[in-house]
Amino acid sequence: MNDYNATRCLTALCLAGLLAACASAPKKPLPAPAAPPPPPPAPQTQIQPANPPPPELLPLAPRTYVVKKGDTLWGIASMYLQDPWRWPDIWYANPAIKNPHLIYPGDQFMLGYINGRPTITVVRNGQVVNEAAATSLPVDKLEPQIRYTPINQAIPTIPLNSIHQFLSGTRVVSKDELQNAGYLLRSLDGRPVVGLGGEVYGRGLKKSGGARYNVFRLGEKYVDPDNGDTLGYEATYIGDASVQRWGDPSKLILTATAQEAMAGDRFLPVVAQELNQDYLPHAPAKPVSGDIIAVLGGVIEIGQFQVVVLDRGTDAGLDVGTVLGIFGRTEKVSDPYAFDGLSGSVTLPGEREGTLLVFRTYEKVSYGLVMVATHEIHLLDAVKNP
Image 1 (cartoon, rainbow, N blue to C red):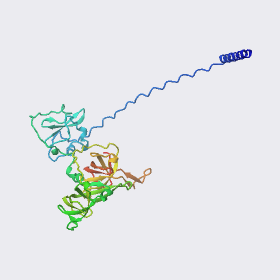
Image 2 (cartoon, one colour):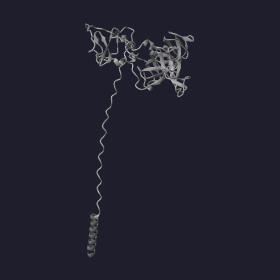
Image 3 (cartoon, helix red, strand yellow):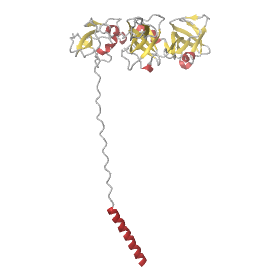
Image 4 (spheres, rainbow, N blue to C red):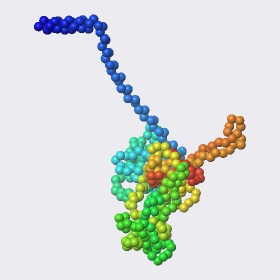
């Protein structure tokens, strides 16, 4: 019992000493509270780019013009603008009109200004097709009348007769695509060439492809001039054929021909295509730099309304309606008149030679129609943003 009480007394004394030591020890300051996080930066106000300058009007631009059969929108715009492809910039469409860019013979173009910018209004039967300039231009109202105009009578943006065969026929393919296609073995009568109505034997045809075929001939190889890569092959349109009897060989008849067919020509199944007549011109969405690598149609000189092949396609951002400027190649020449401080050679810049509009695109190449040719155009001339 005495030992127990002694132990309790000793423990109490230890605790008391410990508490006294703690009370006499200097107190550590409490950590300061964490500073509040800085406020998020105020959102920067995006500066909207200034409106681009309006297209430059030609000095003799007509105040009014009545559309005639055979006109094109590009041709009409050439009477008004220094750069005809910019006609959408002065075109204010009425949202009530389903497609205000469809223009018909007899429509009247009227030139006016809104806030100093030129604008074109179209009047049809006394009614304004696009209403932006209606308040600033007088319009004579005509008596109401019914007018039936088939949509295919609308004037096109560009001359379609220059490109029709390259829309419905000639195309760009890979070499494997043609090599793995069915082919013309020979004509039934053994002649080396065969024309419209001729009967031929073909091999490698598949019923899954249908009974109607286009006939093509492997043509020029398209090569990237910068790195030598093969971009594709021209498949020259020869005609159309229809299977009369399946087998090996199958029997076919030529139902249409652009030129005579011969052994080795290839059969590709007909693919339904809609002929696009609405080529709304616009600048590329991003910088483009390419070259003219071929000219189609069996011509040597490149001029207005010639079809050319570009070494840039959808992978470079091109689409139908893209407008590009055509520029000559740069040239390094010697300068015999150079004096101290000037180099004895100088690089001449590539001058602007024309304008083209892209009307058909593939992944790596495109077809373009030369709309303006101010100078002689050559193969390997450059194409860039206009």
